Image 1: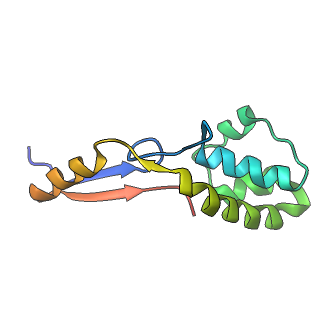
Image 2 (image 1 turned 120 degrees about the horizontal axis):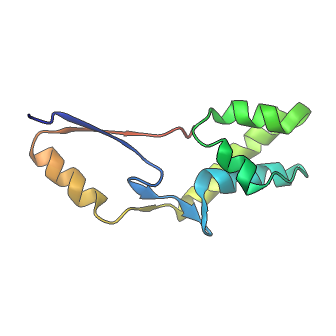
Length: 110
């Protein structure tokens, strides 16, 4: 069997997405909701992982969902500064490339 393509998720697979010990998406959700005085527990936010971000914010944010979503975007951009490559990812990509394997990195982040 010849492997021609690998598809990898970003968060937790190719990048360590922890921001102050919390996954990037959860931290950014929390920042955005707190900005608008909504305290959504991390447990609830964690249950939303993998879902469309705007849908989650619409369901939990009520009338202010559009504003919260905008702030969520800003929070992602600020928090992404903390994201680091998972050790060995670049080396793995180089080895795959040398072998002619195509690489796709996917994410649910906007």
